[in-house]
Length: 71
Image (cartoon, rainbow, N blue to C red; front, side):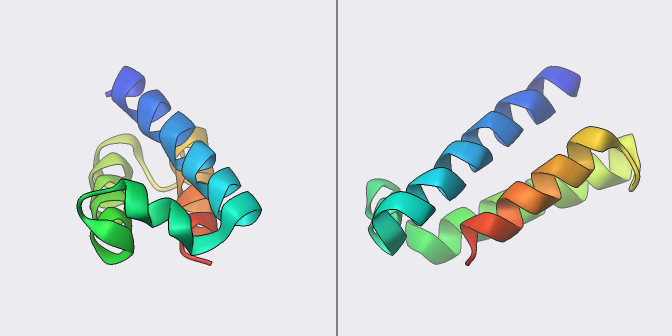
């Protein structure tokens, strides 16, 4: 769980950084597009929250990164 959460956090931060630098075109890289990619990360966030706890540092960081992806 820890390794998976760290991996997803790294990926979400990278996507959020790309959104800031190149805009929503970043989601053209994903088969699921913007909506599907955001849905996927939001679902992962639900699982990590349930298993690791609402106040877990990784969960909090992932929530921030996923939120930044959606801006």
